[in-house]
Image 1: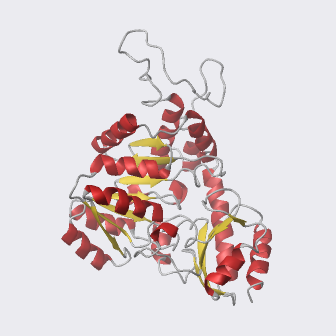
Image 2: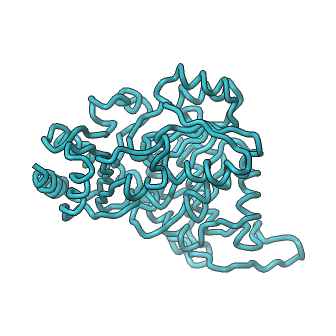
Image 3: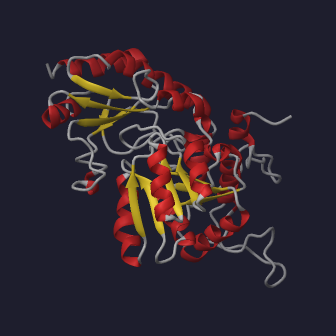
Length: 383
């Protein structure tokens, strides 16, 4: 009988130590590994840039949770995405991505790969007719999807876009950082590759930086593995251990993140200081039906546009007590930030520029009544 998600989160890759019986496997900090016969690594472990037992455990866990064939753990989400692009792109190739993609990814695509001769198109993925027209005309090597998007919380039909992309010979990469495999599994919906900033929900405690790529094709996985080995942007053993520790509670955390975020979205959707709340769990969200179909819950991320513009946004950010003003997301604590001035400042002046009155909220797992009280007093102060 196939094991459930939470069971696999706890057990896959987590074999007890055969020497001592320790339930939690040791962290293998060794940089190198003894060989009994020259050129024949013991159990495949030779040098920790190439492979490390702790990192391997995490990778086995990630592949299982996402329903992929192989996974690779990196020093950051950007390092993971870069390794994938280096593995598949050549000068003259084209990338299609969303017009509200993560700013750091767009910056790399435009300013790093662009000078190498890789072009890109930023499009609205919610219009599948337009999506097909662009993909048919540009013949991209990669179609890069986020859903929900960062920070506008747009929902993309993974199955629909993947069908179009494959029809025209493109690979589909989905950044699943916001939803996590606890709520959404893009490979099951037709995607080829899944990207994570494991810094966020997978680690879950704002104490580790990392990234991961999960792949469904062995040949493509081998190319990514070569880039990781040759260039070395690996997660350290200790970071891999921290990420695995976080993943063990991923399922239950995502349930609480989701229920808290939905409660906040419903409570403040009609607040006088709020222009609109962007959260896919709301029936008013234009992507609600698609999100309901491809996600089991709606996640812990939400954004708000404020009536008072950028000044209201800046004021709100300094008037909360439980919501900490800080970039990043996905930890147990609630965070709030201004994308235009912080995480997405690099796309100012481009097609991906975010509204100046937008604030992004990473809803934590605190008691919901306390979160409502804090956000209510901060929003009321704007009136």
